[in-house]
Length: 143
Image (cartoon, rainbow, N blue to C red; front, side, top):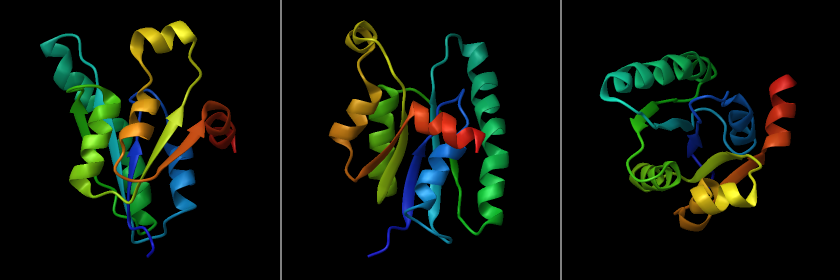
């Protein structure tokens, strides 16, 4: 059976197009590509501004996908538990066929202190996870 629903884990400060390129290897229109981003917010007044900023960042990308024939709903929310756990929960709620995430290099100390969100997704996801390392993402961004 051909997958029809993917979750794209969009970091608020990164371009998700390389992750979308990876998703296109698996699905074709009229598949649904959910653009999902979890935002950490310091203050309440910064909350709305930050959420709106991420929405504005993703909207042209969603519009581009819809012109190609995909359905591209955007979901921007505040981090409830952790970005990885929130992405897994959303995949369960949306019955995603697969998840696409990007990986970045971090020091051992950074992983020990913060944990690895990618690892959390890989180990907890209810579906397959496609991962693009930072080198591939950078290369795809310049192509």
